[in-house]
Length: 307
Ligand SMILES: C[S@@+](CC[C@H](N)C(=O)[O-])C[C@H]1O[C@@H](n2cnc3c(N)ncnc32)[C@H](O)[C@@H]1O
Image 1 (cartoon, rainbow, N blue to C red):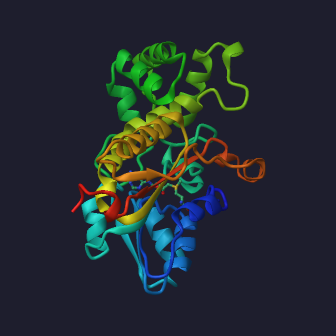
Image 2: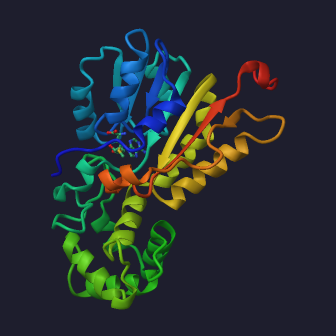
Protein backbone atom coordinates (compact mmCIF):
# COMPACT_ATOMS: atom_id res chain seq x y z
CA UNK A 1 0.00 0.00 0.00
CA UNK A 2 1.33 3.46 -0.81
CA UNK A 3 2.25 5.95 1.88
CA UNK A 4 -0.68 8.26 1.27
CA UNK A 5 -2.86 10.24 -1.06
CA UNK A 6 -1.87 13.72 -2.20
CA UNK A 7 -4.89 15.99 -2.69
CA UNK A 8 -5.17 17.17 -6.30
CA UNK A 9 -5.51 20.85 -7.28
CA UNK A 10 -5.84 21.75 -3.61
CA UNK A 11 -5.15 25.49 -3.74
CA UNK A 12 -7.17 25.95 -6.92
CA UNK A 13 -10.14 24.13 -5.38
CA UNK A 14 -10.01 26.18 -2.18
CA UNK A 15 -9.76 29.36 -4.24
CA UNK A 16 -12.95 28.52 -6.12
CA UNK A 17 -14.90 27.18 -3.16
CA UNK A 18 -13.67 29.99 -0.86
CA UNK A 19 -14.81 28.36 2.40
CA UNK A 20 -15.28 30.94 5.16
CA UNK A 21 -16.00 30.82 8.89
CA UNK A 22 -19.43 29.51 9.79
CA UNK A 23 -20.29 28.05 6.38
CA UNK A 24 -21.93 24.68 5.70
CA UNK A 25 -19.93 22.40 3.39
CA UNK A 26 -20.19 18.97 1.80
CA UNK A 27 -17.20 16.89 0.78
CA UNK A 28 -18.96 14.11 -1.11
CA UNK A 29 -15.76 12.12 -1.74
CA UNK A 30 -13.79 12.60 1.46
CA UNK A 31 -11.26 9.82 0.77
CA UNK A 32 -8.13 10.40 2.82
CA UNK A 33 -9.51 13.78 3.91
CA UNK A 34 -6.88 16.05 2.31
CA UNK A 35 -9.31 18.57 0.86
CA UNK A 36 -11.69 18.19 3.81
CA UNK A 37 -9.02 19.10 6.35
CA UNK A 38 -8.31 22.39 4.62
CA UNK A 39 -12.02 23.18 4.29
CA UNK A 40 -12.51 22.38 7.99
CA UNK A 41 -9.71 24.77 8.96
CA UNK A 42 -11.47 27.56 7.10
CA UNK A 43 -15.11 27.07 8.16
CA UNK A 44 -14.65 26.05 11.82
CA UNK A 45 -15.55 26.12 14.60
CA UNK A 46 -18.99 27.55 13.80
CA UNK A 47 -19.38 25.85 10.41
CA UNK A 48 -20.60 22.33 9.52
CA UNK A 49 -18.70 19.94 7.27
CA UNK A 50 -20.51 16.83 6.07
CA UNK A 51 -18.06 14.25 4.73
CA UNK A 52 -19.28 11.28 2.71
CA UNK A 53 -17.59 8.27 1.22
CA UNK A 54 -18.95 5.05 -0.22
CA UNK A 55 -15.99 3.13 1.13
CA UNK A 56 -16.25 2.56 4.90
CA UNK A 57 -12.47 2.06 5.19
CA UNK A 58 -11.77 5.47 3.69
CA UNK A 59 -14.45 7.07 5.82
CA UNK A 60 -12.91 5.66 9.00
CA UNK A 61 -9.52 6.95 7.92
CA UNK A 62 -10.94 10.41 7.22
CA UNK A 63 -12.81 10.47 10.53
CA UNK A 64 -9.52 9.77 12.31
CA UNK A 65 -7.73 12.54 10.44
CA UNK A 66 -10.54 15.02 11.08
CA UNK A 67 -11.19 14.14 14.72
CA UNK A 68 -9.83 17.50 15.88
CA UNK A 69 -12.78 19.21 14.16
CA UNK A 70 -15.94 18.38 16.17
CA UNK A 71 -18.21 20.04 13.57
CA UNK A 72 -17.31 17.38 10.97
CA UNK A 73 -20.04 14.78 10.37
CA UNK A 74 -19.03 11.62 8.51
CA UNK A 75 -21.65 9.67 6.57
CA UNK A 76 -21.28 6.35 4.77
CA UNK A 77 -23.18 7.26 1.62
CA UNK A 78 -23.04 7.66 -2.10
CA UNK A 79 -22.64 11.32 -2.99
CA UNK A 80 -25.79 11.14 -5.08
CA UNK A 81 -27.84 10.74 -1.86
CA UNK A 82 -28.06 14.49 -1.48
CA UNK A 83 -31.22 14.67 0.62
CA UNK A 84 -29.63 12.36 3.18
CA UNK A 85 -26.40 14.32 3.20
CA UNK A 86 -28.27 17.57 3.65
CA UNK A 87 -30.08 15.92 6.55
CA UNK A 88 -26.68 15.39 8.18
CA UNK A 89 -26.25 19.19 8.03
CA UNK A 90 -29.53 19.63 9.91
CA UNK A 91 -31.36 20.27 6.64
CA UNK A 92 -29.42 23.43 5.88
CA UNK A 93 -28.42 24.08 2.26
CA UNK A 94 -24.71 23.92 1.47
CA UNK A 95 -22.51 26.96 0.92
CA UNK A 96 -20.01 24.72 -0.78
CA UNK A 97 -19.81 21.22 -2.25
CA UNK A 98 -16.82 19.27 -3.49
CA UNK A 99 -16.51 16.08 -5.51
CA UNK A 100 -13.02 14.74 -6.17
CA UNK A 101 -14.00 11.79 -8.31
CA UNK A 102 -12.55 8.33 -8.74
CA UNK A 103 -10.52 6.59 -6.09
CA UNK A 104 -7.67 7.50 -3.81
CA UNK A 105 -4.17 6.13 -4.19
CA UNK A 106 -4.75 4.14 -1.01
CA UNK A 107 -7.54 2.17 -2.68
CA UNK A 108 -5.92 1.91 -6.11
CA UNK A 109 -2.60 0.66 -4.78
CA UNK A 110 -3.98 -1.96 -2.40
CA UNK A 111 -3.77 -5.25 -4.34
CA UNK A 112 -6.45 -6.81 -2.14
CA UNK A 113 -9.02 -4.37 -3.57
CA UNK A 114 -8.42 -5.57 -7.11
CA UNK A 115 -7.92 -2.23 -8.88
CA UNK A 116 -4.23 -2.70 -9.59
CA UNK A 117 -2.94 -4.18 -12.82
CA UNK A 118 0.60 -4.14 -11.48
CA UNK A 119 0.19 -6.40 -8.48
CA UNK A 120 -1.80 -9.57 -8.18
CA UNK A 121 -5.10 -9.61 -6.33
CA UNK A 122 -8.70 -10.80 -6.65
CA UNK A 123 -10.63 -9.02 -9.43
CA UNK A 124 -12.97 -7.23 -7.08
CA UNK A 125 -13.02 -3.43 -7.69
CA UNK A 126 -16.03 -2.68 -5.50
CA UNK A 127 -15.79 0.72 -3.83
CA UNK A 128 -17.56 -0.71 -0.80
CA UNK A 129 -16.16 -4.18 -0.12
CA UNK A 130 -19.29 -4.96 1.93
CA UNK A 131 -21.77 -3.97 -0.79
CA UNK A 132 -23.99 -6.66 -2.30
CA UNK A 133 -23.08 -5.61 -5.86
CA UNK A 134 -21.20 -7.87 -8.25
CA UNK A 135 -17.46 -7.59 -8.31
CA UNK A 136 -15.50 -7.33 -11.57
CA UNK A 137 -14.86 -11.09 -11.75
CA UNK A 138 -18.62 -11.79 -11.83
CA UNK A 139 -19.10 -9.22 -14.54
CA UNK A 140 -16.34 -10.88 -16.58
CA UNK A 141 -18.01 -14.24 -16.07
CA UNK A 142 -21.56 -13.22 -16.88
CA UNK A 143 -21.48 -10.49 -19.55
CA UNK A 144 -21.56 -11.61 -23.18
CA UNK A 145 -18.94 -10.60 -25.71
CA UNK A 146 -20.86 -7.58 -26.97
CA UNK A 147 -21.64 -6.32 -23.48
CA UNK A 148 -17.97 -6.57 -22.54
CA UNK A 149 -16.85 -4.77 -25.70
CA UNK A 150 -19.40 -2.01 -25.01
CA UNK A 151 -18.13 -1.55 -21.45
CA UNK A 152 -14.49 -1.28 -22.61
CA UNK A 153 -15.39 1.10 -25.43
CA UNK A 154 -17.81 3.29 -23.53
CA UNK A 155 -16.11 3.56 -20.16
CA UNK A 156 -12.51 3.05 -21.23
CA UNK A 157 -12.58 4.56 -24.72
CA UNK A 158 -10.55 1.46 -25.63
CA UNK A 159 -9.95 1.09 -29.38
CA UNK A 160 -9.37 -2.63 -29.15
CA UNK A 161 -12.52 -3.29 -27.13
CA UNK A 162 -13.80 -6.03 -29.44
CA UNK A 163 -10.53 -7.93 -29.60
CA UNK A 164 -10.20 -7.79 -25.84
CA UNK A 165 -13.80 -8.94 -25.30
CA UNK A 166 -13.21 -11.86 -27.66
CA UNK A 167 -10.02 -12.84 -25.86
CA UNK A 168 -11.87 -12.81 -22.54
CA UNK A 169 -14.70 -14.99 -23.82
CA UNK A 170 -12.22 -17.48 -25.29
CA UNK A 171 -10.17 -17.62 -22.12
CA UNK A 172 -13.10 -18.03 -19.76
CA UNK A 173 -14.19 -21.16 -21.62
CA UNK A 174 -10.94 -22.71 -20.39
CA UNK A 175 -10.57 -21.16 -16.94
CA UNK A 176 -12.26 -18.54 -14.79
CA UNK A 177 -10.72 -15.05 -14.90
CA UNK A 178 -10.41 -14.10 -11.26
CA UNK A 179 -7.08 -12.37 -10.70
CA UNK A 180 -5.91 -8.90 -11.69
CA UNK A 181 -2.64 -10.03 -13.29
CA UNK A 182 -4.43 -12.73 -15.25
CA UNK A 183 -6.63 -10.04 -16.82
CA UNK A 184 -3.77 -7.56 -17.28
CA UNK A 185 -1.73 -10.17 -19.17
CA UNK A 186 -4.67 -11.22 -21.31
CA UNK A 187 -5.41 -7.60 -22.28
CA UNK A 188 -1.76 -6.95 -23.07
CA UNK A 189 -1.72 -9.91 -25.43
CA UNK A 190 -4.98 -8.94 -27.11
CA UNK A 191 -3.63 -5.50 -28.09
CA UNK A 192 -1.06 -5.52 -30.90
CA UNK A 193 2.34 -4.64 -29.46
CA UNK A 194 2.89 -1.68 -31.74
CA UNK A 195 -0.39 -0.18 -30.49
CA UNK A 196 0.53 -0.35 -26.79
CA UNK A 197 0.17 3.13 -25.30
CA UNK A 198 3.51 4.77 -24.58
CA UNK A 199 2.86 6.32 -21.19
CA UNK A 200 0.33 3.99 -19.56
CA UNK A 201 0.04 0.23 -19.02
CA UNK A 202 -1.86 -1.42 -21.91
CA UNK A 203 -4.55 -2.63 -19.48
CA UNK A 204 -5.21 0.81 -17.94
CA UNK A 205 -8.32 1.55 -19.99
CA UNK A 206 -9.89 -1.86 -19.45
CA UNK A 207 -9.35 -1.63 -15.70
CA UNK A 208 -10.82 1.89 -15.66
CA UNK A 209 -13.84 0.69 -17.64
CA UNK A 210 -14.52 -2.25 -15.33
CA UNK A 211 -14.21 -0.05 -12.26
CA UNK A 212 -16.68 2.47 -13.67
CA UNK A 213 -19.14 -0.29 -14.60
CA UNK A 214 -18.88 -2.17 -11.29
CA UNK A 215 -19.43 0.97 -9.21
CA UNK A 216 -21.90 2.69 -11.55
CA UNK A 217 -19.70 5.75 -11.29
CA UNK A 218 -21.29 7.75 -14.09
CA UNK A 219 -24.83 7.08 -12.83
CA UNK A 220 -23.96 8.55 -9.42
CA UNK A 221 -22.36 11.58 -11.03
CA UNK A 222 -25.37 12.16 -13.30
CA UNK A 223 -27.80 12.04 -10.38
CA UNK A 224 -25.63 14.44 -8.39
CA UNK A 225 -25.38 16.87 -11.30
CA UNK A 226 -29.12 16.85 -11.78
CA UNK A 227 -29.86 17.64 -8.15
CA UNK A 228 -27.00 19.51 -6.53
CA UNK A 229 -28.12 23.06 -7.36
CA UNK A 230 -31.29 22.51 -5.33
CA UNK A 231 -29.19 21.83 -2.26
CA UNK A 232 -26.92 24.86 -2.65
CA UNK A 233 -27.61 28.06 -0.74
CA UNK A 234 -27.84 31.22 -2.84
CA UNK A 235 -24.25 32.08 -3.85
CA UNK A 236 -23.19 28.55 -2.81
CA UNK A 237 -20.30 27.06 -4.79
CA UNK A 238 -19.79 23.57 -6.19
CA UNK A 239 -16.52 22.18 -7.50
CA UNK A 240 -15.94 18.87 -9.28
CA UNK A 241 -12.56 17.33 -10.09
CA UNK A 242 -12.78 14.70 -12.82
CA UNK A 243 -10.07 12.40 -14.11
CA UNK A 244 -11.24 11.32 -17.54
CA UNK A 245 -13.15 12.81 -20.42
CA UNK A 246 -16.42 10.99 -19.62
CA UNK A 247 -16.65 12.63 -16.21
CA UNK A 248 -15.55 16.01 -17.45
CA UNK A 249 -18.08 15.98 -20.28
CA UNK A 250 -20.95 15.27 -17.88
CA UNK A 251 -19.87 18.10 -15.58
CA UNK A 252 -19.38 20.58 -18.40
CA UNK A 253 -22.75 19.78 -19.97
CA UNK A 254 -24.65 19.98 -16.68
CA UNK A 255 -23.06 23.29 -15.66
CA UNK A 256 -23.75 24.76 -19.09
CA UNK A 257 -27.37 23.62 -19.16
CA UNK A 258 -28.09 25.06 -15.71
CA UNK A 259 -26.40 28.38 -16.41
CA UNK A 260 -28.20 29.14 -19.67
CA UNK A 261 -31.44 30.99 -20.36
CA UNK A 262 -33.76 32.96 -18.14
CA UNK A 263 -34.24 30.10 -15.67
CA UNK A 264 -30.50 29.81 -15.08
CA UNK A 265 -29.72 28.78 -11.51
CA UNK A 266 -25.95 28.65 -11.83
CA UNK A 267 -23.13 30.82 -13.01
CA UNK A 268 -19.99 29.10 -14.20
CA UNK A 269 -16.80 30.05 -12.36
CA UNK A 270 -14.40 28.23 -14.69
CA UNK A 271 -14.80 29.10 -18.38
CA UNK A 272 -12.20 26.45 -19.07
CA UNK A 273 -11.37 23.56 -16.75
CA UNK A 274 -8.54 24.24 -14.32
CA UNK A 275 -5.69 21.74 -14.77
CA UNK A 276 -2.55 21.10 -12.74
CA UNK A 277 0.63 22.93 -13.62
CA UNK A 278 3.86 21.11 -14.54
CA UNK A 279 5.10 21.19 -10.97
CA UNK A 280 2.02 19.43 -9.58
CA UNK A 281 2.10 16.85 -12.38
CA UNK A 282 5.73 16.17 -11.58
CA UNK A 283 5.07 15.87 -7.85
CA UNK A 284 1.89 13.82 -8.22
CA UNK A 285 1.59 11.78 -11.42
CA UNK A 286 -2.02 10.89 -10.55
CA UNK A 287 -2.92 14.57 -11.00
CA UNK A 288 -1.94 14.45 -14.68
CA UNK A 289 -5.43 14.03 -16.07
CA UNK A 290 -7.33 16.10 -13.46
CA UNK A 291 -9.80 18.75 -14.56
CA UNK A 292 -11.54 21.04 -12.12
CA UNK A 293 -14.77 22.88 -12.87
CA UNK A 294 -16.78 25.06 -10.52
CA UNK A 295 -20.09 26.88 -10.55
CA UNK A 296 -21.97 29.15 -8.16
CA UNK A 297 -25.66 29.23 -7.45
CA UNK A 298 -27.12 32.55 -8.39
CA UNK A 299 -28.29 34.79 -5.58
CA UNK A 300 -32.04 35.07 -5.01
CA UNK A 301 -32.18 38.53 -6.49
CA UNK A 302 -30.67 37.16 -9.69
CA UNK A 303 -33.03 34.23 -10.19
CA UNK A 304 -36.63 35.43 -10.06
CA UNK A 305 -37.93 31.90 -10.70
CA UNK A 306 -36.69 30.77 -7.32
CA UNK A 307 -38.60 31.12 -4.29
C1 LIG B 1 -9.96 10.74 -5.19
S1 LIG B 1 -10.57 10.18 -3.68
C2 LIG B 1 -10.78 11.65 -2.75
C3 LIG B 1 -9.53 12.15 -2.12
C4 LIG B 1 -9.71 13.31 -1.17
N1 LIG B 1 -10.21 14.50 -1.83
C5 LIG B 1 -8.43 13.63 -0.43
O1 LIG B 1 -7.90 14.73 -0.58
O2 LIG B 1 -7.95 12.77 0.30
C6 LIG B 1 -12.22 9.78 -4.04
C7 LIG B 1 -13.00 9.14 -2.88
O3 LIG B 1 -14.36 9.21 -3.22
C8 LIG B 1 -15.01 7.99 -2.96
N2 LIG B 1 -16.09 7.89 -3.92
C9 LIG B 1 -16.01 7.78 -5.26
N3 LIG B 1 -17.21 7.77 -5.82
C10 LIG B 1 -18.11 7.89 -4.80
C11 LIG B 1 -19.54 7.95 -4.73
N4 LIG B 1 -20.30 7.86 -5.83
N5 LIG B 1 -20.10 8.12 -3.52
C12 LIG B 1 -19.34 8.20 -2.39
N6 LIG B 1 -18.00 8.13 -2.40
C13 LIG B 1 -17.39 7.98 -3.59
C14 LIG B 1 -13.93 6.94 -3.09
O4 LIG B 1 -14.23 5.81 -2.27
C15 LIG B 1 -12.68 7.69 -2.63
O5 LIG B 1 -12.44 7.49 -1.26
